[in-house]
Length: 402
Ligand code: NAD
Figure 1 (cartoon, protein in one colour):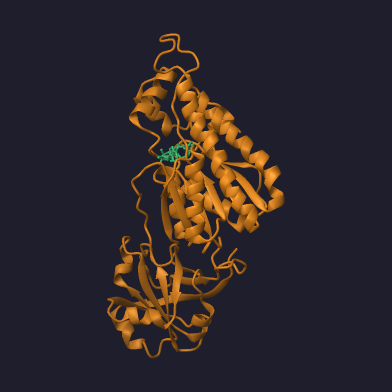
Figure 2 (figure 1 turned 180 degrees about the vertical axis):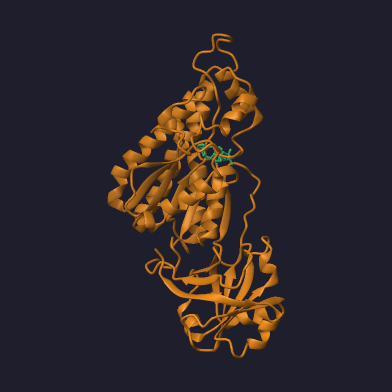
């Protein structure tokens, strides 16, 4: 639990407050545009030198239930303040009695309606992380495979948001775009085919050349081609498992996972450790009608996670699995995919879609958000999860019994 270092209450808001500036023990100015969700940066100014000495980037600023991460503290911010519209608010003295000026810069989300008597609180970020943030991922390097789309893209964005540098690799020749600001990590896009050892080796070399070392690998690239083992209506037809589908799905979902883990693992052993996160699926444990080959590859991934944990723990490499359930649409959920899956289950595409949000399919009654997987991945990759090893985490809204 982060430590609270400051709290105060709003006494008054509005025009006449500015008359109190010299008398107020605490003064805060909010940029008006802070109320607009599309603007990430906004300024908050406090008087009180003790406070600005105490506050560090990464600390958390809470006002009326909304949280802001502080990204800048000090005089530099004040320069930015000069040209901004603002409203003034008078506060009680809080725990600071000095009337010296200081300012902090926050990463803004929409500000809630603020009223007199609302509280302002500042919490210290975890003391023990290198960068002062809770996850401590700033400056680390993560490789995320299959990150041009869907879950991998959300995972890459979450690492960037937490200050980690990310090597985004994917078969797709079109470079994806990410939201970046001054605290984000850096991104390097490398077109890679995870089923091709040379392509993987070359991507790993580029990663090291660009960022110096690799701390985290998220083995995310994966494909799914629904088909039945036996289709009595159309034996050896379009929706029956065959060698081509088998080779394709196992190629990306099993061979691709081992090739990238091996190439990155060599580097992690040399540099003294790291974290490997393998993207599985809840179907890997549960099995899935019409997706037996996909589910089999994901259970193979679970097995990689357990076995590699036993092999690599001694090199200070943690291995963890992530098993999402039904997620909001990604590149994987094409119409062809839905038609194939519906066919294998003897239902319509419409019925299949109804199932995505049914409590019969998923007890929480909704698909998962990509950020819900991404948040879990960045946590598992961080030192906050330093004793989690050799297990696969379900993020499936209760869908699986496993
Ligand atoms: P997606 O299709 O949006 O993303 C997969 C990415 O992998 C694509 O960008 C694709 O170009 C890339 N890729 C495919 N083959 C590749 C190769 N040979 N080399 C490099 N990149 C390659 O799909 P998604 O839903 O985001 O899936 C990501 C992972 O999550 C997969 O492993 C999938 O099995 C798993 N998963 C997804 C769901 C879900 O509901 N979407 C549920 C459980 C597990």
